Length: 322
Image 1 (tube, helix red, strand yellow):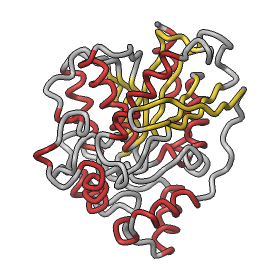
Image 2 (cartoon, helix red, strand yellow):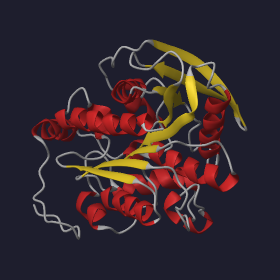
Image 3 (cartoon, rainbow, N blue to C red):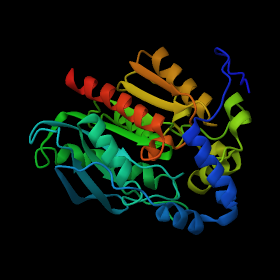
């Protein structure tokens, strides 16, 4: 099928290994996340078998004090990171703000650490609906502050601390850059966003084409956004919904990756365009043949491995210039 996007036409098909995954999902009869409810969605995510990720030089448990209580952290040091003065990424996992943990995103954190050569501070923020906006956003910012305050202890160069995340975590990373800029908070060297959910669902071509994707549906986007942000978009602000920011000037350089078959694609690319228009150095990477969540699938999807290597090289190169 040819998908109209306002850019060059492209005849879309899932990559063969992605198509096999789609077939397994469809044959399982799995319904929408909303149909099963929050607890079922959490159980499914935590139960997905994932091969162990790359070995690390060290993995340390830690915790930050936040405005809503202690925040569990896991600090990954890849073998490529020096013992002192290493770059770091404060990482926020995906899961629609309602699911996900340090354990279910352990593989992704290891992949990002290995690909970038940076220390990864993986953050287990509190989840909705038990903890609605702004709890996760507050905890993301607190984790950034903690990383700066404890940089020397963890062998991190405080001038080379970035933020990153996938999906909902990408939204938290984007919001954290806005908050740090607006409040004169800790410096952020760069932002690394895999398919970030930076707006509520909007009527864009990619949403119409892929809104029934086996990886993420339009209805589930609405449901999860509502559980965290509430049901009234009129109460949204730019920290809960980063696309609402009036200005992106002064934000850190960005590396943003999205799959062609992701319903969020057009919103993500519009966000990238706005960053560039504001003078923010931005690398926008679009990967054919994959959909939402592909970074979690490096064990099974070839293009996910290629994307991780490419994004990692760009992150490492940017850190190396600082």
